[in-house]
Length: 304
Length: 315
Image (cartoon, rainbow over all chains, first blue to last red; front, side, top):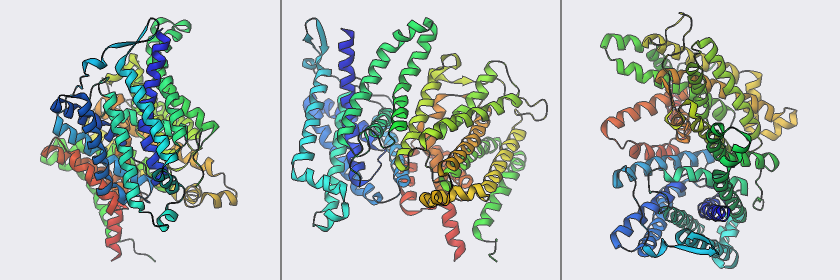
């Protein structure tokens, strides 16, 4: 029973991570751009959702407005600052977007104050749902799984089956060429960046009701997203998906079961001190192992 | 022969002289705050200089240098907590543990290049951060207070502000001298050669990664020393001090000062920390200014302050 529930939690967390990692890996794969501020967009999504939900009084309306706002923010950000960084050194990109993180964190503190916000759920999402005989699971977490899967499927369809997706893939394999063929590459980049921002915002606002909305919420999860795209192979959406599920599962199950497992081999006191550290480390250990075996990640995108 | 008297070298000499004379000014004016501020700055300058060794000369963009600050600090803190107060034991341990950590991390991370390397070093530093948070015997998340600074058998008193300042300054100058010797040695030439063209160096017969790894370990060890100094300076060591934003700040200092210039990180550390201090006196939200400033430096002032000075001195 607990195993089913924790596995679902792991799946849910993994899917959230995928939404974040997908934007990151799209932007990296196509524009060759490392965006540390992706975590800030995640945070902004959550803050927007909390604010708009409070204004409109409707969760759904608030969420939709927040998605639009994050999309817009991403486009503005790309237009004002980030497009000047394409083609620059990765170090430049890391530093510039690090500056943006500093900016966003303090901007949020200025606007919303240092205390966190809460994003309350509507009543119809708080009821537990019976998924197996005798096993109940919160409707909200279930809806995250459904929404994220739908978004993942849509993303797949858009990238693999539409004209825009074809341009995106073409842009990833040869930027200059599709520019030369008369495609407005700048516009395409802006759109991709906006899409990535909206995905990050969606992840942030869906996570918001489970945790509190607070400053710096995007940073830890951003690093997890980086680990995921490193494991999955930078630029590969499929790799990001599988790695995200994997990491989400390991993180959640490690936290849930590692203390008990350790207690079998260690004394109770030693286990309860070692377990949290060890479960936080598991993912990084996994990444180290992957890198030793396959430095390019498990599913490297096609060579450019 | 090229003249050594140019604007850049004059500025470096003035800054160095200023750092040496600062305690005198502090004594005369009674301004103790400036002494504590600059002790901190000098320690961070040492850490930034160590990062510059691998970033500027080795082309390895480590995003996890704060881990060494933490490791050096925790080595001092944990030994002090367990009743071993002698700096003759604490500091070598701090250096050795930092070197060992750098060896393991470096051996794994150096299998990758470019942006992978940035992310791997970042992730390993976060791992170190979580380990530190998990050490409940040593304060866990809350950190560990160091009740007594390292003792050096009456040779030097670290609780004396001026003596500690000069110790830090000596470490900084020593560190920079060491880095200068390294980059001008055969070893340093190979490392710089690998940065410019790895394949060519391989073809000549150098094991690029071995050179890289040794350079990485030296850098980590120097940064571990900065960590030991920092722990003594704050009498406190905590996981928060090794959070990834700290690594980012070190990178910013290097880039502000001018990557790949020997004295650049010192200028960068002074610039960054003094600016932070000044801005935070105006407003609580100093990062609102620092963040965009960083963006502007990256966009328009590559080569940092040393680069700008170099540009002026050529005119």
